[in-house]
Image (cartoon, rainbow, N blue to C red; front, top):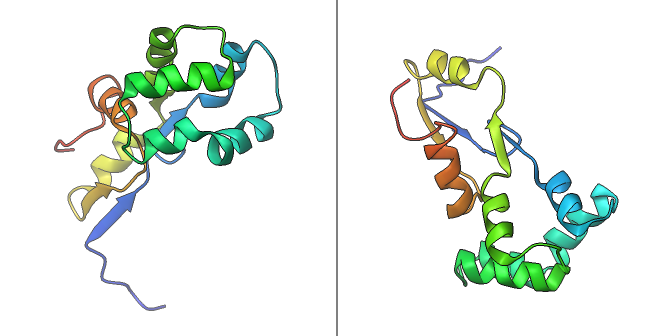
Length: 133
């Protein structure tokens, strides 16, 4: 077996280091139990406001207002935005230990499509940010 000279390990966040609770949260706000696949399909491909926000073309507040209207959610925009902020619920078990074991030998980084609202929560509340392990 050939040994690979690796200096950097690049992680994604959602589903890799961080648990995300988006589908159940949307189901609660919709007041219905649409199938998770249907919600993901709509979120990822059909929502104008998701694409607009994720491409940096609107503020979080405009995104929240747009999503509440577009999806007919049973919450006001401010409540949606506060709920959306907490969709990243926790670090997956063992993340800190894993990163601590890798940090002495590798440069660790993340490359993710995580938005600013979620990143701030992940960094400030969940404790995963730029720091020494």
